[in-house]
Length: 407
Image (tube, rainbow, N blue to C red; front, side):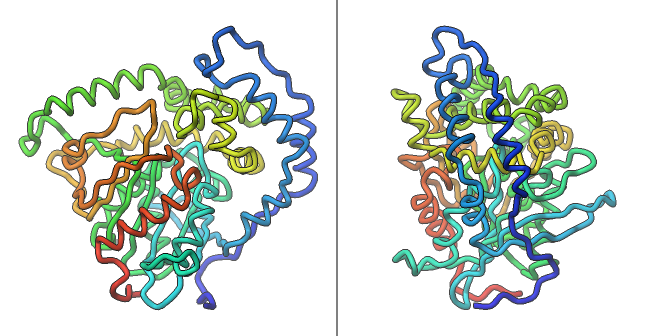
């Protein structure tokens, strides 16, 4: 099917050879830190032995031109939109039209420390299910890079999820011409998607989340008292954050203090980000080296890191942690709730407690609830077949794809 003309510029990823060579030179000069005893299971952070293997592969075996071919296998565009404060933002996105006449527009939004590459392996199965022996619905798949991430533009000042949601809505309606659409996301993308459902509910057909970020006003009369299960969950979450929130504390307060090291050293960048993949991915923790590599092959994880490196966007990505709380985008107003039909899938992450459904229903119109048996925080990259089937089934249960969506 030919693409109709859209008000956006065609785009393809291309990194000049001199920038690739510069990365290799920097990796060659990597100075590794000492490692305390007892870090076999990453108790102090990223494993030295893992980083030595990762840096060696990045330097000697990682084939960026081949990676570029994979990134460019779907049509990409960049469109510029102006926000409410008058700042222009250039949004990079994949746009793959689905099979048939009854396709469902679906915008997939990544989080941190991720890029649009997280969804690359599910674009084709979602757009063309018949190629994979699946029934519909088929989707028109849109995968944007968050503002300040990858090949989208750097904002002059940090921009939060609520403001990004308004830009996403304009991308879907003004640039791509859809009256109604569906959305899926995890991590920071789930903040953006939740705000889409709050701010543009008339246009949302349904949403699918792998994280539930909105927090209700528990003191409001509309809220029931916290149940025993919810109380235990809140306590467990607080305990988890006390142990794991070091990165968030830095990025939400003084991200510039960290930025000079991450933007100047590829090994420093990889060391900072790899720790999150280990902790939040569904890796085999009994064999930390091989478990990490099996779940996140070097080519996959280094594509993510390389996109941050070549675009110089790690600091603008990190500052989302400062912009989000400043915007208050996770807090529901008293009596406020997402009314858009919401499907939630909880992927096993062994360091996070399972969310009680009763808590989710305080803030969302939950119409489908699934607990997955494998996969982690980066579900679309970790388990693409499972993820694509789950997303397709969720929206099919909502009745999407049965009628043609207006454009």
